[in-house]
Length: 330
Ligand code: ASP
Image (cartoon, rainbow, N blue to C red; front, side, top):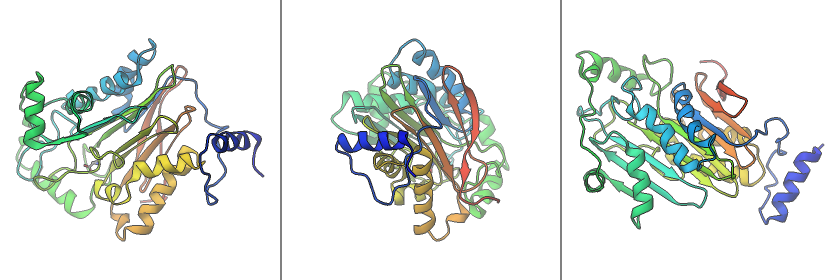
């Protein structure tokens, strides 16, 4: 039987002109409505990132400023070896960064394969705000950053140059790709979603990508709709894990569309993982995790393998939660 709350919610969606898929499970919003503002982000490094976002959100600031400030924390932290400065290089020894940002108005900016700039998220924001384009890549992205006052920095830390690291990581890469928490020091992409006091939702996603990737490889993280998608009328979603699987299913866009059609954030993330499981034969060899946040402040998550967690911050809550998983045991 459909609960009154989900009925009200579905009715409101229907009145607002949204289609409701017949296959959608009932909306389950009663469990998890949170007061605004709220910020959620992927992995343990989401905790300090959320704190930086909260500084802005708690003062009534804009969610766009909050997500940018939030993800700049792991970008600058050399201990986070899958984001920004200190990130794992590609197989040619270069650190190349991918990032994107999106706000509730549908504005978006992105950079891919950017070298020597510590904060790709801020370059992505400038692409959004100062250019007629959505995405800049490689040398063009670097030139744009330098033209806008960013400094060129060496992002390859001594830790990443240590002999033996490359062999160890390459082995991990070649066997079971990117199954988090199995590979030492692997903490992955940060995707962050936030709603401010005025109900505006924004998202950011930033990464150094898959460790020892082929030179020139770009993953899902800077692709609008894959690594991140935000729709101010519905909510947002972000992805982490093997980007190729997320790109082939346009995962974050899919999650948002499923929420539009009435699913809860958790149900939508589960369905996006199910889509991967249905379409991609060797999906068991990979990890993918989604987080989602709807306009009401309800959040959810789902992943392929156990081991993916995400950080949540509201006025009353600062927690790290384990995502539900498709494969229940490794
Ligand atoms: N999604 C990122 C990529 O494929 C990596 C990750 O989140 O682990 O580049």
